[in-house]
Length: 347
Image 1 (tube, rainbow, N blue to C red):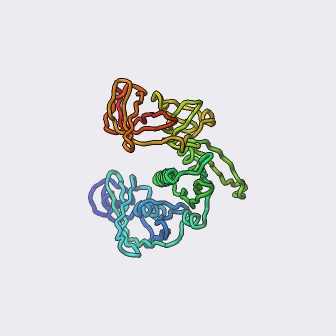
Image 2: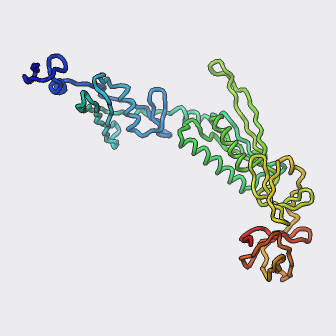
Image 3: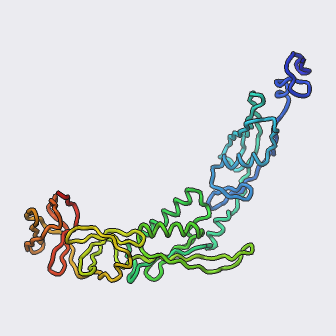
């Protein structure tokens, strides 16, 4: 049939005209001249409908274009391209709607001014209001946390929070950190995330975990609870020397309710349930830890010299080892010396 527009004999697409003429005179998309996007003045998050997001500006704008622009159904495999001058307060953008009709690409350009409306997002509003859904209480049993433990715990919690935020948990933040009763308190905005974090902390540092809740009100007809997670670390720390049932151990590490220790006389590793070491005697202040000079070593014994008074000691080797250094760390306890496994190799 003849196209009424170009007069050539072609397949008629619509309204008596061929597809080429139809595309030349028809617009498949339309939209507003201005688009307003709320942006948080504190964190830079932008809002799409009722959702705040940390996505790049171009992705947020594309969502608003899909929302505001009308695109005819004839256009298939639609995509949106944006080109903006971000140096200006009112951002001029060229929006290109790309699609296909019968395999022919259609590109329609629209000039839009994007206005960023400064406000405060939901998360920052809660953050500055001290909002929190959970408290992480980190304590040590029968002692105060050491400064190093506090630093390690603080770094661990902060890195966990940052990791979860990077994975998309916008509502998670640390509302406050305080030192209480020789330990640390972290106030977190998301109780589900707080539970996951304290479980990871228990796996890493060991200790006993207790959970409690407090009703703080109602929302949408349901009770709201604030959670408190108490992680109480063991009475001893990594590297401490303990006496358990007359046997001397050095603490190696912790995992959940397990204590991993080294029997110093034989260099055998043991794992104990936390309940099994309640009766252990922490020997802090009873022993002396120092480095001594290696004088001579045989198959089963090693001679060392105290660098302070040049006194010579003979120590029975715990296992078949060969000392590779000129000085070795020693624990002096009750007139007996133990070699600490450091820079040694089994033969």
